[in-house]
Image (tube, rainbow, N blue to C red; front, side, top):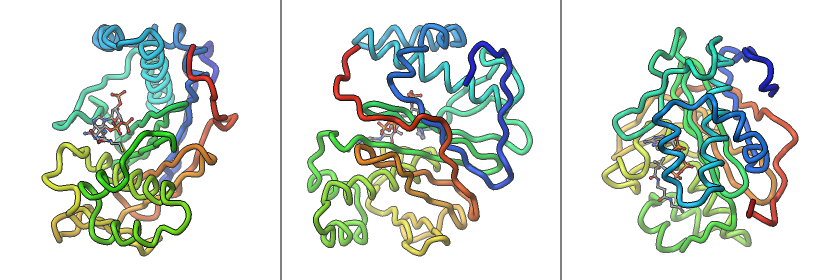
Length: 250
Ligand SMILES: CC(C)(COP(=O)(O)OP(=O)(O)OC[C@H]1O[C@@H](n2cnc3c(N)ncnc32)[C@H](O)[C@@H]1OP(=O)(O)O)[C@@H](O)C(=O)NCCC(=O)NCCS
């Protein structure tokens, strides 16, 4: 992505979801240039981070989100109008026609930005080192079939946990509710019959058919993207692929 090109154009094919990767390294390299695209409210938010590094990462990520959205919308990054849904999901004030939907997720080492036209989208990424009590968290958020999958997990218990976790979070984020917005995340079931995915909440089918894909980001991360429509292809964009950063300091 050439930030010196004032209006890079980006294209989404019909029924295509794109997931862009921004490594922390890249965000920290470009944060200064990217931060000029932020709104005053976003700049104020960047100031609230406890560490300088986290503030720079927020600026870099938010600036890159604006660059990508502007590329799809055909405007300048600073002109992108952002608002939030009822449960805090960022969305476009004017999503265009067909509407452009997006979502983002961040973890140690990288952030993902997901885009689709005409259908809501959610994405979630977790670093495998994330400190998590699998039994305690699983017991609170996993459905009966997810708990059964945990029982059958084989050697890679942590991998199974994060695959289920990121899939569930991606679905919740596509719905815009997050985990805080559902009465009981255990009532959300994701069907296991790809390519025809269904999401059942409290026994009722939600959103018709879905497209849900696990993303391959290498051994250190687990990620899923969910689109509230069937038949989408999912393309990972941006290179080089993220590399494991041993030293997370700046
Ligand atoms: C709000 C929520 C989406 C945050 O998820 P998270 O895993 O902490 O963070 P992620 O990096 O994946 O996503 C954060 C981004 O999601 C977006 N987001 C915020 N609220 C959202 C919502 N209701 N729906 C969809 N996306 C939302 C934002 O863009 C946010 O980034 P930003 O603040 O820089 O703009 C919500 O699902 C939540 O609170 N989850 C609980 C997470 C948890 O308990 N994790 C335990 C780890 S095992």
